[in-house]
Amino acid sequence: MTNVFIADDHVLIREGLKKILREELDIAVVGEARSGSEVLEGLERASCNILVLDLSLPDKPGLDVLKEVKMRFPRVRILILSTYPEDRFAVRCLKAGADGYLSKDSAAEDLVVALRRIAGGRKYFSEAVSEGLADAVAGGARTLLHETLSDREFEVFRMIGSGKSITEIAATLNLSVSTVNTHRVHILEKMRMDSNAQLMRYAIENKLVD
View 1 (cartoon, helix red, strand yellow):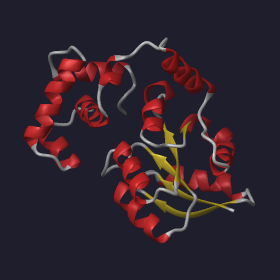
View 2: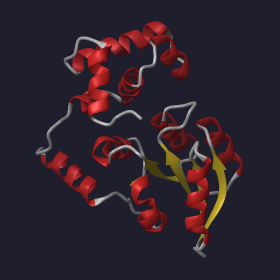
View 3: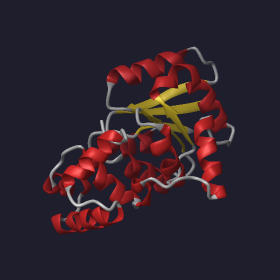
């Protein structure tokens, strides 16, 4: 039996996923959460094989939750479920320890297949992501500006892109304002930009923020 824990801040999404899985005799939903802190608390109690993790939880960046789960619960495999484009997020998530990446647009058709593949010890990602990984290994992939950022810089960049202030970002990430400002300077340098407005425009044009 594959025991699944679902983490998404939208109750309709959670109910929809549970409805899909209710018909599967070999898959059971053993817990759910609407925030990053609830994920970590819930995994302490629930015995699960796979965590289905939304990248956009309200209290913690999805990559931070992913890494903390991998550190604290190394036997739990993780399927990222996201509205963000695969070509923008999947490779970064896989490098951070995810076992698969599934777009919410294709969840109804592919969720069960993805869970069974991951439960069997394999990775799950789309053909487009597979091609991107192959290009990266072969050195043929074009590096986008945001791909030069570290994971922490990437999260700060996305928060700037969504219009959050430096103070808000510091509070969310539990960092000092000066540390966030340092990240901002590095982000501007790496992305060859001069202002938050340019970062916001880039984030929106590349569908990196909601």
